[in-house]
Length: 318
Length: 271
Image 1: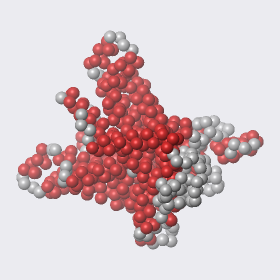
Image 2 (image 1 turned 30 degrees about the vertical axis):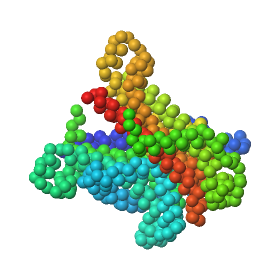
Image 3 (image 1 turned 45 degrees about the horizontal axis):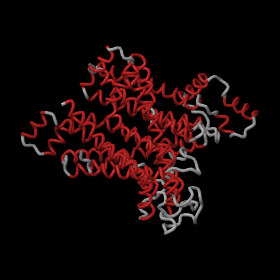
Image 4 (image 1 turned 90 degrees about the vertical axis):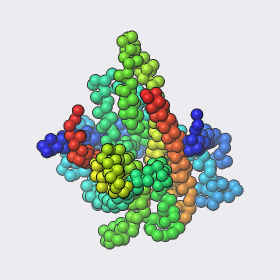
């Protein structure tokens, strides 16, 4: 048991180190590149005096490492700074939007994960027959389709022509859960379709892998039914890789959310990030970029740890 | 050699898209930025696909937009391959701290979602075509690096490479004469997938307003321009969105076939 604890602790420490390195990279990406924040705020026609004043005000005259440490210190104490474009407190603005984004991502995951696993099991049961082929074909199609294609096709048919769901996903505090779910029905569908295929295919592969074991053959030769063999014998051993796939796809979901939020004008983190990239509001971009990266790294880390805990073979490196 | 039907369809449409992109100046019926009709006219004899959000011919915009999309995506793919394969081969052949440093840096870059990283960088840079190609190419070269390094590391331990080394050949010679020819088929198979990624990535950036800047436009930008029409039941935005999907699916069909073929070859040789 202590071996596991040690390995998990190692992974966590590595994850934190990675996050620190990522924060350096994100900071460097916005600071060292040939582009000046003061210049981009004021535009090309700014007078030298105005530029100098703004640089002073933003602390741009300090060396980069000092500015980085100041920023990192702020992030660690929950102070993400203020937005350049409107002087708003970033932590406060993000707090509300993060909740909205997680709400959207949660429901997408709640629909996509069970559906993908069920379909993956069906594909294994009917492997190389038409349900399996259909699923493979859909996978190929869905990795080629941009989110906005799926999004606008859904809006066009279900939002505009049939009027089943609103085409703009507005949520606010006073809404009941049911109203909120109705509002996010279309974005959730898009996100589900985007991650479904990959998850389905990997689930299928994971179970097929287990299906080649000798004990499965024994179960089959005992005369057990196909579904029973898959559910009771193969599935438990395939859980670890499946959880791994689910986590990786959830990480992707967090990124896919950026585009989907813009399509449906949803008041979340993605929309906030994109808006402020256009406004060249560097503090907001840094803060949101870091949060997106942290969630992404965190989910990948969970995938890693689940793999270690559930698969004893990974606990003893060669 | 029998080419499967799906690959033939893919090849045909991929060829058609590229041909249209190359011939754009000669086959586009109107000027790219020319306002020729009313806003969002339905398809007619004069405008086969109708007009766009400010009355430009949609077909003309589609042809020029495809040219922009394919041009930028192709260059970004070429850059990512040149850089990624070169560094990947170097890391595998030289090994030691060079390999460690490059690989750990690539791990770091890949731990940030590419779209987020691109948005961070584009927030401080002037968005121009060369910048877009550079950002997309650099970000995507990490994936090519990982593949090339893995493939080259396998080849690097083979007897014929050892023989070349004992003969006294330099690292450069080994990379170009021994590793590159043998690593080519898995890399070619990857090429199609990277191109699709570049197309989708560029389209997404332009859709978000951070890619190709107006009045020039690629397909992703055209979706953005026409998206307001959707709620009035005008499908102008679906045309470029569908074209992106069609291009990606066509290239995917070809890439799938190449991938199967190269893995068959490998199996045949290795026994």
